[in-house]
Amino acid sequence: LLVRRGVDPFAGRLALPGGFVRPDEDLPGAAARELEEETGLRVLPSAAGGALGDGRGDPGTGNRDSTTGRGAVRHLEQLASYGRPDRDPRMRVVSVAHLALAPDLPEPAAGGDASAATFAPVADLLDSPDLLAFDHHRILSDGVERARAKLEYTSLATAFCPSEFTVGELRGVYEAVWGVPLDPRNFHRKVTGTEGFLRPTGTTTTRGGGRPAALFRAGPVSHLAPPLLRPTPGE
Image 1 (tube, rainbow, N blue to C red):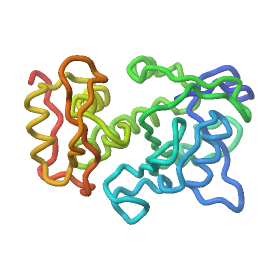
Image 2: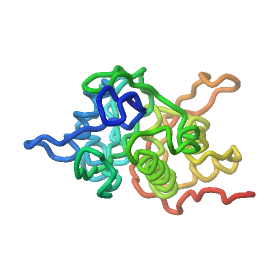
Image 3: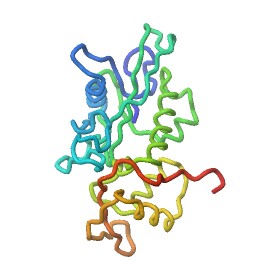
Image 4: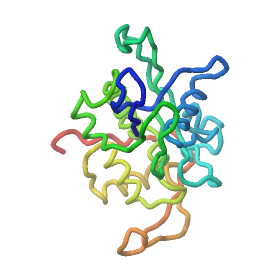
């Protein structure tokens, strides 16, 4: 999710949403406010902090709130701090980046000092370091790697899914984030065999076409044992 900067520096360039922290804000609150101001996307109160199964809402459900519709971010966590002295031509600025995840988002609506807001393919951005303003290519790269790694050992993938989902839809999350195709049978065996990862609903759906597929909800665990390891190149 990117914005087109409406002000200098880098006016007209694409950038990650962001801004300055107000005196009365904590960091997650500032990240949530800036995201909503510049893109119109709201962060659920239970998502701030990004803790999985820490008592913020229903443990292991990807911080879901079934009463909300589209446009709600369900997972927000601090990614890293970036403080290279020359990263902002205006002054010394330290940025604390956050990683936000959501299963189904509407088109963003630009606001604040953003002249536009849009979704862009991650692969295209990673292949073109000069497309983004400031050091946002590095931040994006770090965020993608964080998401890829966390899908291996946590139930975070369910934060990309609706409240009820099929194993095929969950596999689609892993394939999109990892950037590799996965064997459907092996994936089904692993995720359904990981204790506490998925919780059967007892119902089916045909929304993917073909034969009815079983629906699941996120289970109670936040960390997977054993982990689902990414395929190595050539596998």
